[in-house]
Image (cartoon, rainbow, N blue to C red; front, top):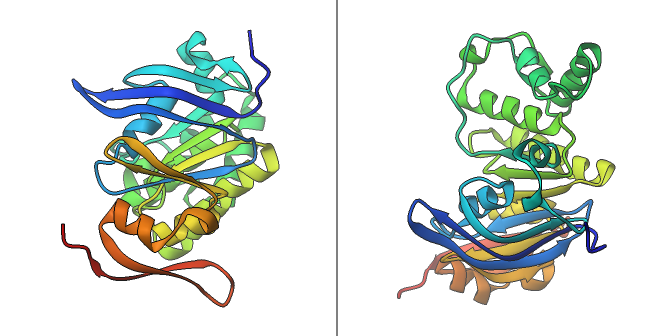
Amino acid sequence: MTDGTQGLVISNLAVAYGRKKVVHSFSLGPIPRGAVLTLLGPNAAGKSTLLRGIAGLGSASGRILLDGLDLSRLSRVERAKKIAYMPQSQPPGIALPVIEAVMSACSGVMGREASMHQAYDALARLGASDLSMQLLSELSGGQRQMVALAQAVVRRPDVLLLDEPTSALDLKHQIRVMESAAALAREQGAIVIAVLHDVPLALRYADTVAMLKDGELKAHGEPERIITPHLLGEIYGIEARVEHCSHGRIQIMVDGTLHS
């Protein structure tokens, strides 16, 4: 049973971490298909916890609708077909070739030949095809992060949730990752929600931005409209200027911290 609303709608979502409620009555949407939403905010704002709640992990209450379908009514397996979640920390590597690890994400969805083709394509999009025959146990933390993203992308989810997907990557691969995420949204009509600490990088690829603090939504909208010195001071406690580079991209110049 659906209500006919297209996109992702989050209503009164509350998420706890252990016994502590971290996200309080979060509502947002509809987030249209093909859109990239970045979640910004200081440490402990609830960004990662919010992603876990959307993914159906941990203790959460509220409603999450995808194209009018209540995701809470789906089994864990069915929900996982629609939502791919990439956590910030990756498990230790094992002695498994990268290509096999990425193919395993397609398990039960397509045959082996098709899985291999999709796995190579996912790695190539990320500029990581050279890793395909290496063992996971031989990779650096940043390389494992790339493989984890390939495992999420190869499933072609309706919703892709990324928690700090660029944290361990060099500048070139940060751009590759965000370009790949934006392409997934644009070409396949997916909804991408990414937690990023690099604010200029987030603003470069975001269609909309949600600013969180203390587990609550403080602002949401197009970057050009909501990113102001006043909001940056309120959210991050900094004194900053918002300017534009020669390419028209938003640049944030931090002059100092605000004294509380």
